[in-house]
Amino acid sequence: MGAWGYVILVAGAIVLGMLGQALRGRVGYEGILTAIGAGLGGFVASEYHLFGLGQWGYTYDGLAVFPALIGAIIVAVVVEAVIYFAERPTATA
Image (cartoon, rainbow, N blue to C red):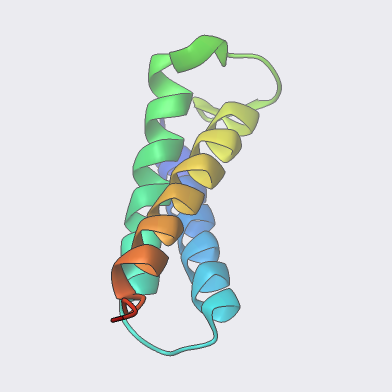
């Protein structure tokens, strides 16, 4: 993957992190975790062709755009779910 592919991947990860932060409605550092997870998910899905995603769709500077987007969204949702359930207070009976 070339330099512009990495720039697009990082920018997309930051946008997903900010979106997760905005949907949560609180200001904190959890958006950084979501952005890191989205970046890793997008990179792995684009480069290693996991789960049959392959190199289908548009490729820009070595970045398989659609597989990277799908991988980034899946990992971002998983990270957001983990953060949600980890922060949620437990009820005591």
